[in-house]
Image (cartoon, rainbow, N blue to C red; front, side, top):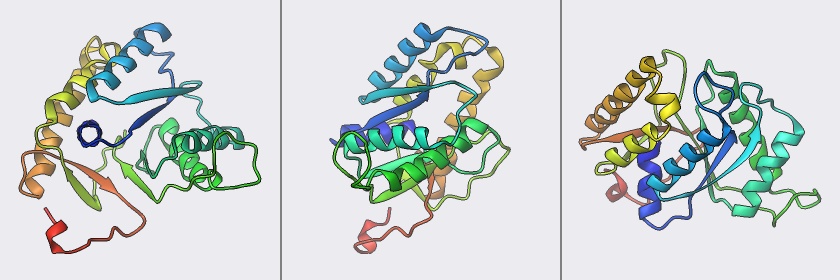
Length: 209
């Protein structure tokens, strides 16, 4: 959802990226390199980022994890939260989504030892980063026309993941293609898909793209 992130930032929204892990261990790179890549990607998108630093490939849905994410939600006073789509082959993605869903609830509790004031994000939306051969069936599409290059550049900023390993370069290609495909579904140049379990309200038909 890099195009949406860049658009939100340019519109003046206070966007925070929360990395659940530092991305290591992986076949290429190291923690210092990954941190620099993540910082560069956030810079390209024009947003802030922070990292909880759970062990990569070992993210687990626990009370501790829920409370750490809830603390970030409270400190940021998040009104909208985005999490990975809940059907995925990557255990870290599935665990992260469950953690975020429960942290949204925990963040509003008053008698709990967490930083910041209680907060309850009004919206929880899901973006697609599935490792399954899954065809997205989104609830809505967001127009990202004009933000495609920044999205592309933020992805390849992770050189140890999407540039150095030749087999992963095609991931960037199909993400670029997906931008155009989803854009064609709503008559714009590019778009990104999102899913919601809760209904989205319109103030009128003029809200439709």
